[in-house]
Length: 76
Image (cartoon, rainbow, N blue to C red):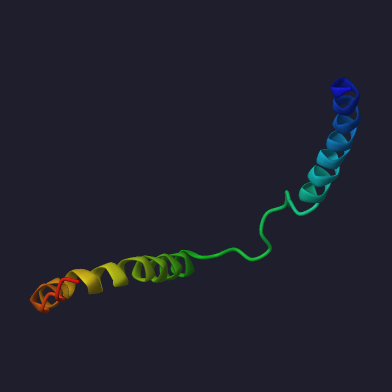
């Protein structure tokens, strides 16, 4: 009986996988971009991204002395 179920499930999963691959392939483009991004725009975007990643870490590192001076909460 398990062999029968295994044979029945396999064609359904293969056809489903093919349909998913066909849907995914329709969104992939093989042509170059219509609008090229210049070096100035690339530098600006990379700077904004780096700032967004490093600013919170810099804020925390800058305020570590303040965090250490806070009174400890009483033990519960």
